Image (cartoon, rainbow, N blue to C red; front, side, top):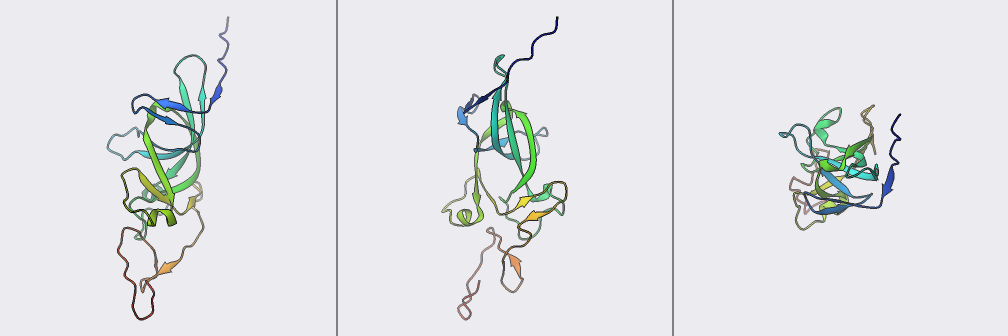
Length: 163
């Protein structure tokens, strides 16, 4: 006789035991990569589900890509903590969550007094199949006409008051 498939139920939150942190939909998390030499993946939790047969909890996530993971790769103006919100969704075991993180808007990130290890910023959405960005352009500054990189020091000109 075939075994009945366990009913999935949606959870409002879940406590990740190894880190003793509670996560809920909307939270950004760091997820363990298969290759331990790679940095943790950054994702936004969309949904948390349990199969009702014990501790098998899964999270539906929307991935953030790092510039080097995108078509075109890392460019000079990309900040070291920059990520792109992608259209790539996936379901993973909740056991792969390594910790919580914060993905700030670009504007809020540039106002932080101190940037922690778990702070990131996002100023683009990324289409993982076409490599397109939204918005497809950003404001440029300086004589180099490059977008602002928050890792680089910018100095305001006393003559024209431009950066």
